[in-house]
Length: 353
Image 1 (tube, rainbow, N blue to C red):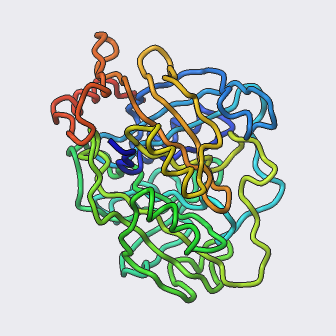
Image 2 (cartoon, rainbow, N blue to C red):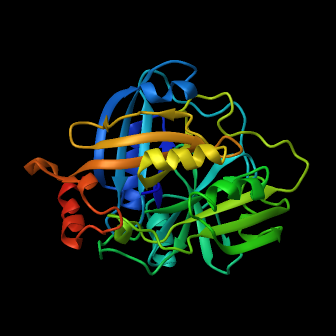
Image 3 (cartoon, rainbow, N blue to C red):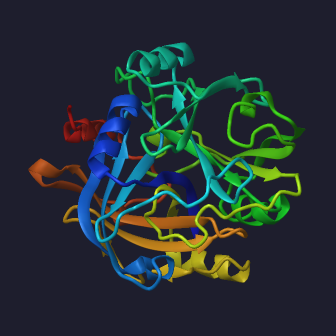
């Protein structure tokens, strides 16, 4: 069997205080179900940590209402910091994380009533109302309305559905995101000055925006939970110098550290990627334990502008960790969804504040 990319699994963020950041995402986005939450060395990442094996705390967390996961990462062997410069739309890398809600007005009230200011409101090129907020570290988050939900969990927000990535050449970037990672469906391809970005850093310039989905729906154990996902590639058409968001920085510094994809048959996928010029920059080469309950195989690649993409082949995950109940994903059909009852049982892992 050839390598299979099943879709976006999670969005990774680097933070300076894990406890504060995760509590904020639990409160405002309902990300309160952890697959793992452990401190460990990160020998895989030395190419992105200036040759140093760092220690980090990482939690993979979800909202069982629906949507993809987030990985919240705090380096513990050094202090995560912001870059020395401020970034804006069109800089190279992940600039906006995108999340969904069943009711945009209810979501606004949720943020405002809990003391969180909205950064900006507007309408996207596909005429969808949206708003933006910032997390405690200043990361920009977009909220869009959706009708696709896995449970009726009573939180006004759902999980992640993708991100916005700054590119120097969208056609070159699509060779990876569309041709290999499977986001081949063009939802819109527009050039201009955009109303929904005018209140965002650098948003008043002329951009090309290409929103990508999948012509073939995501498959796999968690596709019912994650739902439809999207990737927006953007290109600043001005002659401004475009900064790399993670240029000369450490992996784990404050920002969107990577976009993670769920895959099967990592070896075959690696051969396909290498032939296309996107070979693994680092590879665990074997099963990696994330605490006692989660076992995965991880690799990293870079898009044409150096944005980090994590590829994860999951072998073992907890369902009811307190009772010692785990799921051996490797023995299942890679396209077969997990039973709803099994996914809904993850609610017993929910962290309550």
